[in-house]
Image (cartoon, rainbow, N blue to C red; front, side, top):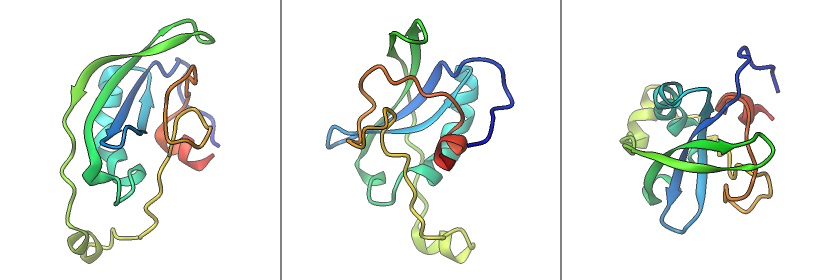
Length: 129
């Protein structure tokens, strides 16, 4: 994982909430505007093709509390990005088929972001880990 070029904490995140009850981390950032600018790009990189139709909402959340003890609090509902047709993406050379997903934000493999896990870093940094 590469070192972050920023010195602040990553107190904001965008979470895709699935119809199955699971959640997927889209991105984290230092400010709400940073996360709003990044989540659409992260959509195509971290949400698997099979999960995209099941995304009900995207929640912009802020970390409330101390770094070691707090909770993520919903601040705003973000628009779910339109999913391009797969044939069009492949024709443009974008269909690499890797379908990578961050999975869950707390690292226990259950697909949920519940708990006290406070992720730091950008979506790209977390994906490289």
